[in-house]
Length: 370
Length: 170
Image (tube, rainbow over all chains, first blue to last red; front, side, top):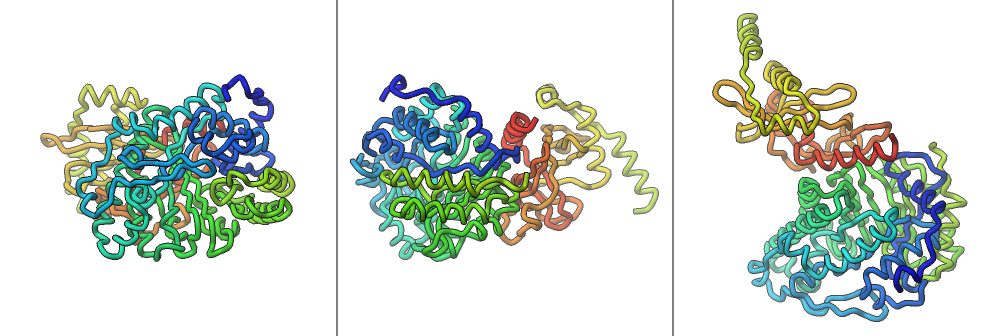
């Protein structure tokens, strides 16, 4: 769908949504909490397109996301990314799938011995690589066609996530037990890559946001000490080096999945003035906003969550009720609050459920602190 | 310190020679700083001992704060005097540890020593305030006296944040 196929974005809405979005970061009063359901390929479904079409056409994907932001009245920012970034730059093969995000089918690191020989790409090499080619195509589309919805990001996740896009997750987990020192080496390379990737975004666009955090390294898969060693500590070093390299000032710690056994250590992770922390689950339950604000509210902006499974499979009423509960516990967090989904909005989630989140924000998300 | 030693130290400080290269002078100009300000920062730091010294002893970092600006002088010893290596400033005011206290055990050690306390400095989040907004930033901190410094490599991050706050709050 070329640009001319879309209806123009309403400028009055855009200004209002922009104000809602900046409130959590700059304390400028606005009416209510903004909703960020982490919209990606769900936007394609709204335009009767498939996830395959979404990820194969980054420019069109960016347009669909921007348009969906207005449709739902949510965070007015155009994005394009997927989880298995960076593998291709290092020789991985990916499969563009019809109904789910692209997935790696062949990894460049197959044996522990491959790690020593594995060379991290320079910023110049990454800039010309396949990941940034698509990423920049999407971001450039937003910049040119929806400039007020432009907030450039670098999709990193954490060093464990980068490492498991270079070597199969089963292999990395096995080496963590049999040869943990070799995983340390791999993680160091992943952190070097993170810094180089962020440099590229910073050089091209200036101020930007790094999406980092811990997805693979969650409590369902790893012990606290393993998370500390292979994810938290190297990631803290990487974030500091990213900031020192001139990237940022935005840092978004996306702690996806269950982090009961480790969420507290992120309180001391390096922060900038525009830092957001999001924790997905507390055991099997959605991470309570009250707990998030208790631990992070006096530190940074809190991203309260609604269970992604509920958004996908629940009723609008269930989504509305959970959003309302999370909002009431977090909306007046001292350093700002955003309500969203615990991870990416599922492609085929009922639109009525996303609408239910926004409806709850309008009904229960009005600020009392201003 | 007896009075003679004190007088000797003060006279040494006030007669000190501080070299500023053309390159650094241009940097100061770009950063809106004056050479006299930097000289005063260095003199005050040498007189009070309130400064950071790099672990290899080659560099010192000193600062001066007022309500609107914190200025830093990064300098080194040179031929019995000092040489200014860099000068920078930020408007966000550092007010204390993020979350109320520094977690020294969890913090990384910095490449600096607090000269006054003779204590290894750490890297930690500190609260910074500007235009009525308080948010964290990563700084170099003495865990003993609590003195906080912004490393030169973090200046672009903080300047970027100041720019956004000025646009949205100014």
